[in-house]
Image (cartoon, rainbow, N blue to C red; front, side, top):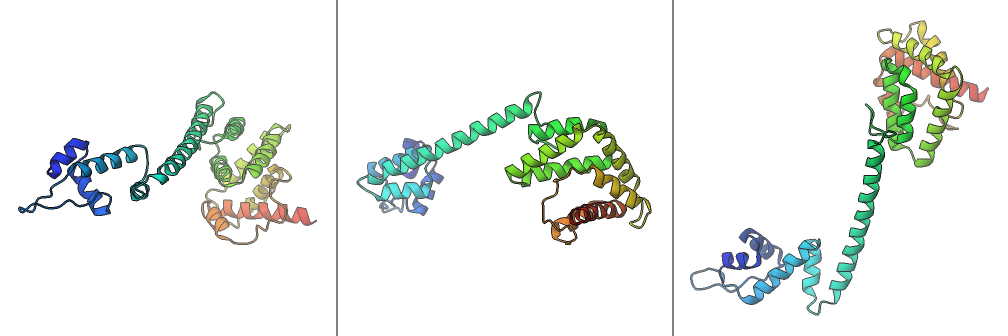
Length: 252
């Protein structure tokens, strides 16, 4: 058989056959006097087996291992591992679909900052009165970032603290006042006298226990530099002073 006839018989392309030759999966046939490859039925049998194995999901390196064992002793082991891997993928897909159903439901997490968890989406809905504040929008983005990066137990604690604060009488009003002060600093300099007032108002809005014990926010690490750089100068200074106020109150 010529290469085209072999490929057509097994249902692959001639390019695939050449690729398998290159990888050493399919033995090279003898060549005729005119230089053309002369394929036998044995080549068709091996090529068909390669096709069946790859259609099961085996990688070419795994196919090579199976073909190398003439007795086929490793095939059961390889296929068992493949079945286990597919089961893991199936479970992961079920989990992703469950999360998508939650996002698409009425209590889902489809928000401007989303997708986020249903818990954070619920908190954002409670913050609806703050939707006109640019600073509040930045905070929602930061909360979405923290939720993505933080360990599960920290996310649960964060959501509990913030949700509890929003339900405290006057909590929303205090947050509105703090964000209004911060928004007014958008075009101000870091030495503006209103910075201190905004910092103290923001510090009063942060629930006790929101910041981890032992944290040092005076340290100018890369995350803090990136966070401060995202704010105009006066707002960044207000956030710095807010964190400093909280740390001073802890050590008082």
